[in-house]
Length: 308
Image 1 (cartoon, rainbow, N blue to C red):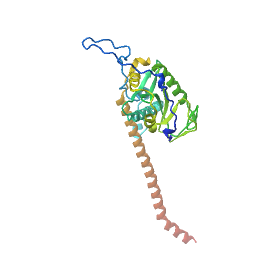
Image 2 (image 1 turned 120 degrees about the horizontal axis):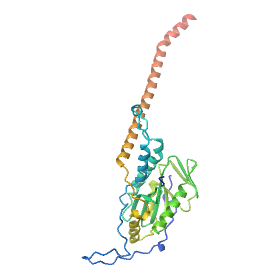
Image 3 (image 1 turned 90 degrees about the horizontal axis):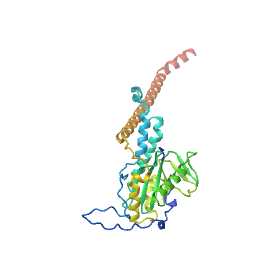
Image 4 (image 1 turned 90 degrees about the vertical axis):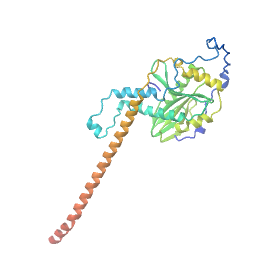
């Protein structure tokens, strides 16, 4: 992401990394207990700033709150009638954050031997990798996209409700970039959250498109590509923020984001109450009119009879 279906997962082809491109990591040489030595060249140095504990959606949540802060707060009247507190400019960031949080929740179900790093800042232009997954099946970048409606996938094109997107191109570029940085084959994934329907007309050649609910099953059923030592070595380098050439990421205010979500939920409930109230008022008015018509019906009938 740049600071940015129902399909059977078994039917998607895996772009598998070539295990021959990875050399097993030789064991580290023993050190003298009483005289600490520099880590041997064959062993990765401990990361100076680990990204392992970085929560999912960190980057996009920070951007959501930044854009939202530019929007003036709602007036008392707007709050009373339940106007949505989310600004128009923050809508896409907010939706992206919800998508990344959902995929992060799904990835929590991966078992032992898998390593997941979220919201990795990369480079100097404000880009980040939504999720990086490293495990027995290889290395995978995940570009999360939250869409409603219909998603259509072709060999070189992904449409959302009939509109062209750059999802495949961006995911492929991200995979190549990460592969170059980590010096290992990488499979780029586009993971769709919230779509009503996913139609895969033709599988993309270099990118795998999945629905979030199929993600863990697809990963765990993929063929093995890395040995446990290789998984540990790659994940150790990936967890070091210095690997990615970006400045130290700032931690977003998750409490403020939770408050925004709660405020939106409250506004939605208030709008529903107002909506139900309007419907009830219309029904009540209609009943009063019908009752009035029923009461004056005999009078009108009698008057017409007298005239005739």
